[in-house]
Image (cartoon, rainbow, N blue to C red):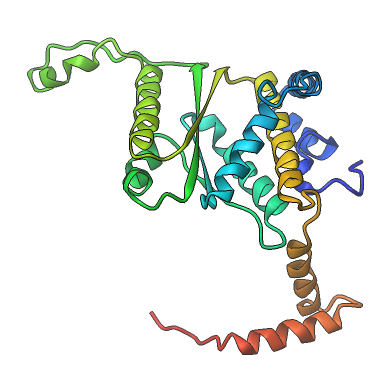
Length: 262
């Protein structure tokens, strides 16, 4: 059972998240082992400079205080796309309170590299970037050589692995952002497996909680989310929520919502 005081975003390593993970064929024991290893590591490090969770939270809050009110997470690994989505909820719901909080932005390399890099390098200096790479993928493909005349100009690609090309792109993206004077954090994972994913989840949960401490907000509640839920209950006619239905109706009238024909 999920403890009543554990929010959904912090439940991925609880019975709720583990049941779903197990149903998908994920080895939950390895997932928990990785999380436990990271927790032990973080708990045994007193120095902020040696503790990655403290260091990441301190850097994030410092850049936020300098006006960088967006944090972009950009993994160059398709398997981390869902992790990126979870991070957005974790970061936004935990820290967006009392007028504080940086906006989480999801990006996936190398897809979003081509659609957003122009903004990242020459746009406003209002973002902190985190680029994540994986050293050894589970599967890789090597580009074969060919004597096809039309492909001769691309011969520099022959013999290259797809993972090496992806890592080159990640490095180049980070370098381009740094050259433009913007801050970039880089994280390299040796291999993407359950143990390391569990460790990564634990690291970011610690980092988020510590960031809440530094921002002087409670990272474990979500009053803004609950307000929206209560309005929805009222509109659906749930008992004891009639006042919420009246309030949301009055607020909707103030929006001056109009139908738009297309």
